[in-house]
Amino acid sequence: MSLEEFYRHFRWWMEPEDERAVERFRAIERFFQGQGKASSVLDLCAGTGIAGVAAAKALSASKLTLVEARADDLTKVHEWVEIAGISPEVKTVAGDVLGLPFLVGEHDVALLWGHSMPHFDPFQAVKLFAGVALVLTDGGRFFVEETDRIHGFFYRSTYQRFRVEAHDEGSSIISLYEGYDVKRGMEKRGYYRVPGFEKVTRKELRPWDLASQLAIGGIFFKKTELITPEEHGVNGVSEVLVFSEPRKVLIENMYPNTPF
Picture 1 (cartoon, rainbow, N blue to C red):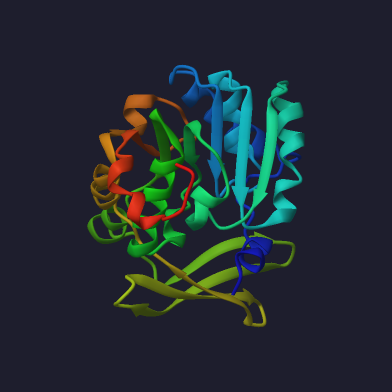
Picture 2: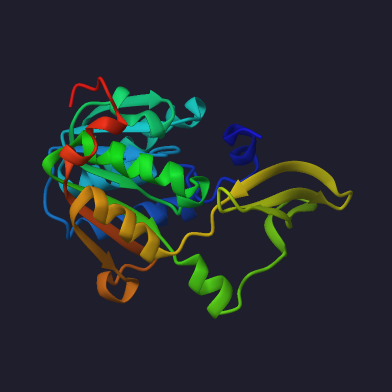
């Protein structure tokens, strides 16, 4: 099932007209206010652009590029720019972030915000991190907002085979565990609308832990850092992984014929 179909049912506070999304926008902005300056920001799996615009404002960036598979969502980035009260040069790219070096040029800062890593299996994650490292400047930084699902699921006992995912008028969407792909490390979940038990979609998701992402990032970046909610102190922002100083020499063979 496509991402377009999946996110038609799950919006998760990214619509500019949603007050909860505006609060989330302000929280993201507050986090990046402590992260220095950057002339260009690259927002990956950008959705409507909520995180990219917030980061661009806080970092005083003059250039903002957003990459998202769902082209319709990208049309809303200008609403976030208006809310932010800024006027960067905005470029939107409807495409797959796994082909990043063929889609965009160099940027100072890249971000993957909003707990998007479960969409990538470990093999795809390696390619993602390599691609980001290639399109960052030599002193560039990559910010990933994530949470530790292994810790939550297994050590804090929050894993649920049956889970209520969303509510709307008169119905709910639930998800059920439907298997596990051992080769790719992906959990299979079916999504159903109740009452009626109508099949909505099926999705494969990776229950990532933070240490694995830090380890992968450490291959492609010289410096890695984990900033916990207790350390950054911004309500509404989870753990943030920061990767800086890309090791481009290690990556060239993964993306032949790129301009970097």
